[in-house]
Image (cartoon, rainbow, N blue to C red; front, side, top):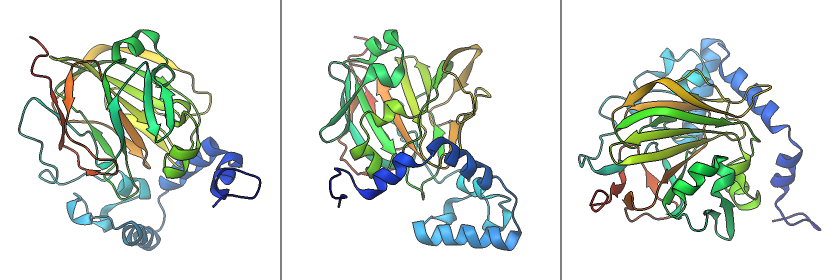
Length: 290
């Protein structure tokens, strides 16, 4: 349904006038507040009921969380997400749903049916845009009930990352289908992963209500007043095993996995497919080093 004389749903126009970045910072602040135990427990249990969260996987009991953010960024039990045993497999870095996937053709990626956006705008790095053009991408959306920590797709190390401040439109279907170049407009923090099969990239996209994006290898935090774009080279590369934690969304969003030409072969995926951390989403190409 759309408003007479307008081409988008009413919620789009509400989002248009909402001070999205400020609102998201306020949400992040509230999520960190230590509220009375009874109120916090009631809030968590209401959220669990509405979004059907599986608390049996969590390390902590509801009574152990001190803030809503601690609950939202909860850790899982060690055996909750087994990793695909094939060491040549590419792991899903998160729990979520497959939003889009496919080839990067002429520097364009698919946002949704009928909508494309430019790799150059997403990365804001001409050299790397050329490196990934002709490769493949997978977009994974994290719903409210999902586990919101982010893990490494491959074994390797992080020696460089980029942070690009931006807008914070919703990454729900409302935003994906109605906001042109959504993922290249929103705030994003990109981790470049160097493996023995070459570099791949993990783009963490901010969204409305996302309080912050954090990473383990640096003190950079997203969604701050006065933030500026930066490309940072780490003095000491940060080593990661496949499936090891990289960072987290403090209130959810989307990740985009990028791979250069001929590096990997995607598994058969379906739009909207439910996917779990550690599940194989692709495999290193057999003729990569041929």
